[in-house]
Amino acid sequence: MLLAYIGFSLLAACAIASALMMIASKNSLHSAGFFCATLIATAGIYLQLHSELLFVIQLMLFAGCIVALFTFASAFTNFESEGDFGSMLRQRKLAIVVWVIAGIQITAAMVIGGKSLPGRIASPQAAPLAPSMGDAIFRSYLLPFEMTSILVVVALIGAFVAAKRRAS
Amino acid sequence: VIAGIPAVVYMFLSAALFTIGVAGVLIRRNLIVVLMSIELILNAANINLVYFSRHWDSGNGEAFAVFILAVAAVEAIVGLGIVLALRREHKKPLAEEMDLLKW
Image 1 (tube, rainbow over the protein chains, first blue to last red):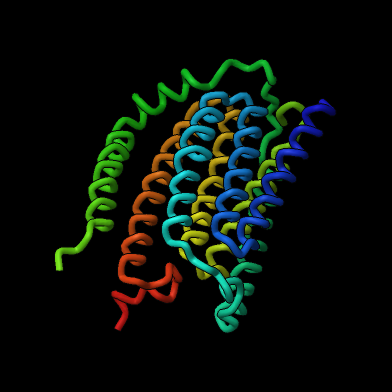
Image 2 (cartoon, rainbow over the protein chains, first blue to last red):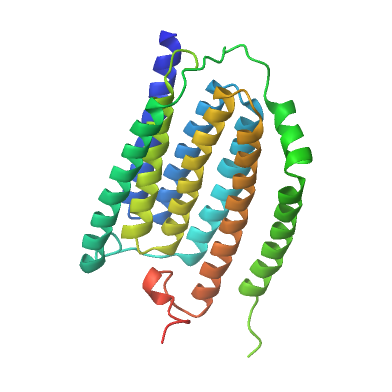
């Protein structure tokens, strides 16, 4: 139990610190690296929750493909970001106000919702959730699944069209 | 409670990552970092979904987490396509450079 606490604390601290570094670093390539660290720490938390399938998907799809995409985009745009961080003073004030309000709302919802949450105890040796998840995707939520595949096709075509060289 | 760790801890981690993502969207001007922050927000939602999926011993939460992953990948593809298209017009990928639909 203590080991679980220590592991979770390490992973959570790594995730939050990397996320902070991601929005604070000036170079977008460094941001991509810290983003990858956050995603890997999150994958570790999934593994701790015994959802191995999502652990693998997170590592392959999120920490693999999407981070590679971001890295390539950062390298292609080759953007020197002097004056990038917090140079829009007027918007920054508004941003801080919105941010504080959102944080208070989320914390309040968490405290209130956490109180009314029944203390169910799931044993760590519980049955794997992947069969039940496949059941949910391919029986209960088959239509959203098909919509997702249509969305992927549309997004692929849209990305090609957007990135195509204009005939001028 | 899973392995002695209470639910509110997972919810706190998720909320912390979510607010960091919101801060990134609001204060950064580099579009690539803004897109990364949006992905961070989706990832924070996924932590809650996976936790409560285990909490209730039901696969529904994980199913929605998979849907969110798919939407996040699609969003990254489209967003980065737009960023590269903006780059083609010899503009910097900054949030205020996207003024095509403004008048």
